[in-house]
Length: 275
Image (cartoon, rainbow, N blue to C red; front, side, top):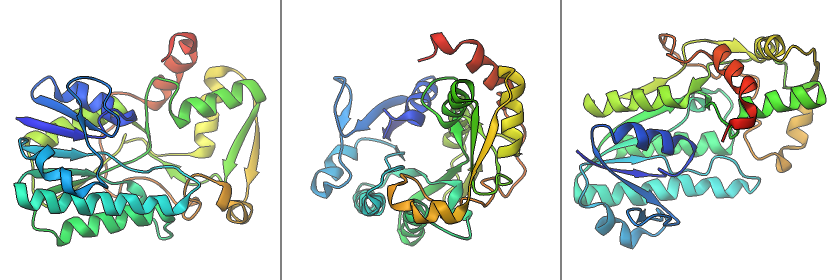
């Protein structure tokens, strides 16, 4: 199958492309062309999209504004997908769209709202699509929130708790996510929403204990109440709304191949050699 992965140079995209190449012919769509085989694509440039996507059987769209203090920039998630849908309605491919588990929140911030509205665009369209909602994605590297938390705890001996700290997450190793997408590509089910999670639900307080056990250091939990976050949200580059809600899948997922505790251990023990 010929697959175009838009956003394939991003944090999730790189692992996904590596996994899909085992079985399929893959091209990467990116705003900034870095390699000869890359396809330069800007979803906000509607006129050129049809020509650039027409030769592929499946489009996987990971391109998204995820974190920014410029809240209006999240509107690009909606505009870009709208343009892509219109192009696909002409060219006829199937699409897998990456949303977020956060659309399940009762309170939605600008990012979550943009993703929820994007999902609605797909439902109202005439294309064959699937929606993927990952939970918190991390890897054995230095470019994720788990690593950043470990670093803060080791160096400053503090553990920032946003909100009450009781909210649960279901961390998902990006390699496990990539393998799940490979299976979805094989068994494409039009209109289906797949919530993909690591299968281990833990609170931020539990995460603190796991990290402390591995780094062998006690840390002080610094709670930042929701009221304080709300006042400061104009300077915070992620959604504050729904911060105290669980970010877990509604369905029960089997535990992934990678366990969060083992991955934390590997990150701590191999910090100097991580990318």
